[in-house]
Image (cartoon, rainbow, N blue to C red; front, side, top):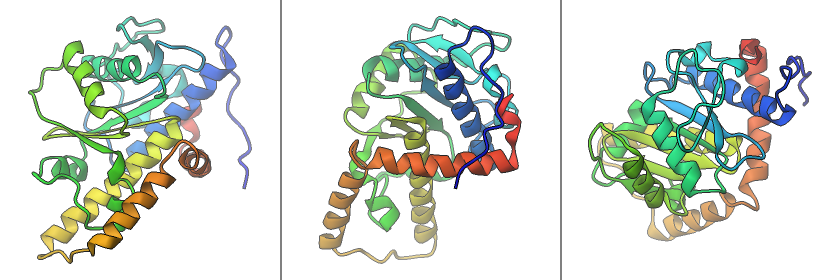
Length: 259
């Protein structure tokens, strides 16, 4: 199923690939709004500007997710220098978290950071994400943990956070929230959707009483399978299909992001 491209052309002087990245990111924010992923002005998604090493796009500090458009996104680099419009400025935490990730992980093309109830609830548990559902098993090999160090974040702290992520794609920020990175925005978004579902299932199962244990042989088998699925060879093409479907959804329901 294809989508009729009704998006406006790139503004004068803007490379076509940057404009396409802006459309993707603005669409992601509108989808995030529908999923209840916002926390006032406190959470953020970003995408690396195609063809650059240090530049990425992020939300302006002052707009709700449902207000964000492709043209309102801010271009910034890993040193914190804003290179585009700055009517609203940038959330300082967004600058250091995303800047640190892109500086440390050249392969990362997108990142999503949330303070969701389910994700933060599981990140605040001693055991973190538990093997209590197939949803969890499929992503567990990608999960890493970072202990809470206070509300103040600086570049050194976020550099350590990026090191802790290592070869993973999901970072559980203890008592804080969650973060996913991907080789594309679609990959980071799909991983966050799957993480959110796994966390919600875990909390629901725990609230219902004693959780039925999965046999260890099935845990090991499913984690190995998930490690194969969520790989550069097979996961990214799958994510492209899922992201295309999500773009069609937001095109139908909230096309204003393309302004």
